[in-house]
Image (cartoon, rainbow, N blue to C red; front, side, top):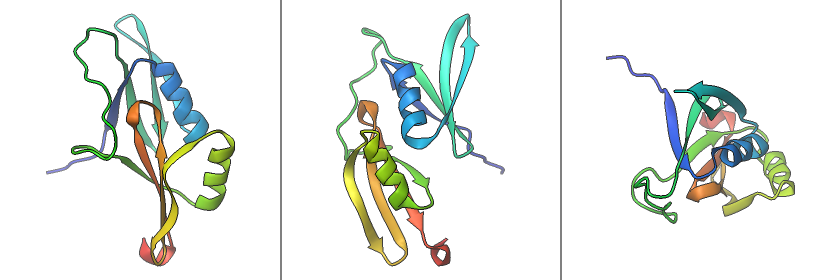
Amino acid sequence: MSITWDHVHIRTPDPEAMAQWFERMLGAEIMRTMEQGKPRVDVRIGGQKIFIAKVTDGDGVNSPPVTPYQGLEHIGLTVKDIDTLVAGMRAKGAEFSKELQTTRPGIRVCFLRGPQGISVELLERDAKYQ
């Protein structure tokens, strides 16, 4: 069996704002396409795709959960120079649900709060813990 990662899918009432948040906070590449005659916006980060679908009133989609919750709880991203990255995000108005900390020797993490309840873990590992 051969399995490879394809995408993460996010639903939001404002796909453009969601894409811009990923671009501003995490340096994601915004990808604009057309799907069934309608504009579509997605992002690519760390070589992976995040599909962004528009939510409208009455379409049967539930409200976002409050973290922590059961099910898919967060997206984890490996970063380098986490101190500089976090400082830059704070300057852009980022909100953190868990502050930067060393969880064990060589492992530093924090959690970024995104739109619609998205939780993004930023993780820096010392090379010997890769």
